[in-house]
Image (cartoon, rainbow, N blue to C red; front, side, top):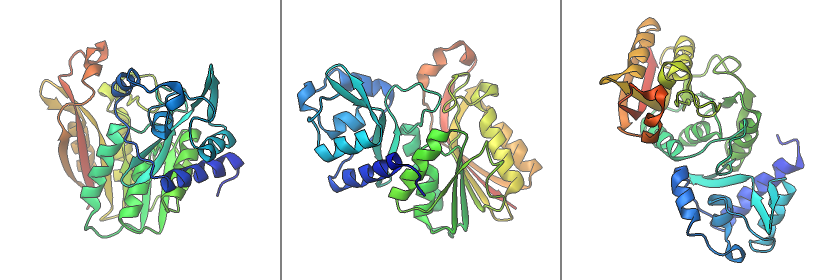
Length: 309
């Protein structure tokens, strides 16, 4: 499954962190920046400081095995006075996930944040007590949260994690292995190269308008274009009884949810039943200061449940 020593080192890192009881919940970036102002002295940094909050540390300040695994994985960047991890580790739905370091703006950034926790909870609510899916596919998998959570909630014969980002595919593969989920990581734009017979598709598409970053830019129509494209692709391919579980952000314009309007149109055209609800009425409020959101009142976190008739 893993072709490089650095991949093996990262998998071993997650195991070693679990053995030590490591735990960290990733907040919004502004929360992290504020926490940095209260940081411990350089020589007193612990694992949460280094792998959660993303703070630099001098060699020898943290557990020696952890530092050695980070070095073996090539995940340490030299800085004045020590090192900084290029990766972050967070616990979500009971398992640890590797993702990109705080503040990374690289094209290959692998996101995990508060939206990921809402996505996982949405999946838990919708999948608990339901018949297990045979084939599970996650579109735009990123760190692999959706595929891993869905697979752990019900045994699937096949799990595929799709993304256009090679860095995401690498980390998703490692995260799935650590979680005990056998998954194939496949380079795919939307559903184009994923299993056409999947009976459960999960997705947390990007939804920020004109962000300029692949992991967050949702495209045209106030950031809803990618979500609507992925939803339409899934609706067109699902077998009868197959489901799409989609979590994303929905912009409200003059009281109208433009994402919901688009999903309703696709559901009618594709003979699908649509369920839809707001999970949080107001997220990413700071985005509304940008000109591209001049006519948007708020952005809501929403969950859509689509079933093929």
